[in-house]
Amino acid sequence: EKGGHDYFMLKEIQEQPAGVADTLIGHYAGGRIILDEQRLADQELREFDKVFVVACGSSYHAGLLAKYAIEHWTRLPVEVELASEFRYRDPVLDRSTLVVAISQSGETADTLEAVRHAKEQKARVLAICNTNGAQIPRESDAVLYTRTGPEIGVASTKAFLAQITANYLVGLALAQARGTKYPDEVAREFAQLESMPKLVAQVLESGDRVREIARRFAHVPTVLFLGRHVGYPVALEGALKLKELAYMHAEGFAAGELKHGPIALIEDGLPVFVVMPSAKGRAVLHSKLLSNIREIQARGARTIVIAEDGDDTVRPFADHLIEIPSAPTLYQPLLSTVPLQIFAAEVAQARGYDVDKPRNLAKSVTVE
Ligand code: F6R
Image (cartoon, rainbow, N blue to C red; front, side):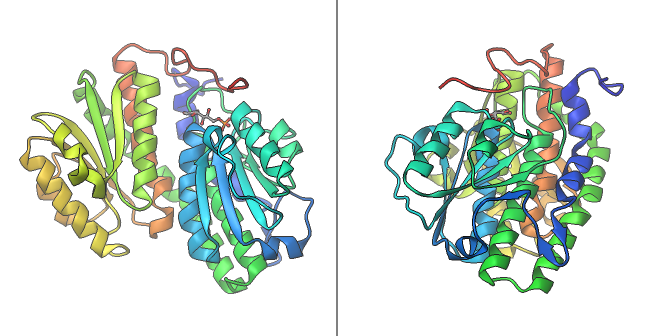
């Protein structure tokens, strides 16, 4: 049942190409993005003037990525908020607000209560969920299911990649409704999504290299993660995986914030992951991150750099280099997250922990 793996989570990491591919099935036909359930008029979909994304944990990190895509494609302002904060804050909501609730289980108490609060304020709710018929999709006005199958490992892995995929489908659905993307552009983005499973599989093939790096750092006290733009939520997710699976102190930062405080943490031997943006797609950010790596390396950090294949500029500054295939910026998180999952799982195993059942955690958090 674990497909030859010691743990479900390891199998689920390997299932990610299929999880992304399956999430695309049935969501594009006749030149249009299609939701699974839509209990609101097309006109409503067209006339939203603001989007909130609410979620918890890894689903929140996926939500942070939704902002980049939805704002870019629709020009709608998007706010992303932890569900547990949103519901107690009196957010400005009305019938032209779309609230996107992301939940693998569809039963998370904070996210469900955020949905209820939004509905009381007359906002419309679109759920992204991995569990058919769960409470959150039942109470929502529209639903797009991630179709990655049940996730047994407590830590989110394949659900996370499927959520990113689903977020982008929602972004394209809104762009098509609003006319901010022409049908041929939607088709191009969808084709890009369809090409991702093959690239995710390529990243999985280089897993041995990541596991070897993980074993070297399995007993350090702290690991930091840096990223920018879409690499920033990836850094947060990498840190969360390491905390929950390996019980290790880990923090993710926006690399631009280094000088505003976190650089004080850098000391000799501290491992720091850096998620490099594409050299082609984001040349300016790429050069800024290069100088960040240089700075932290000069202060003794051990740099573990995730960069696009053939990005030779990073080599001199990477104590360890993990190469991923090149992809357009928005899609890179589907690739750059994977080594971080493998890293956390391997460190946890090296420390003798059960990666399917991290201590103190429940798969579905149905109490606040
Ligand atoms: C982390 C993890 C949790 C969940 C969070 C939300 O690996 O699994 O942070 O992402 O509890 O759960 P759902 O998506 O079911 O609402």
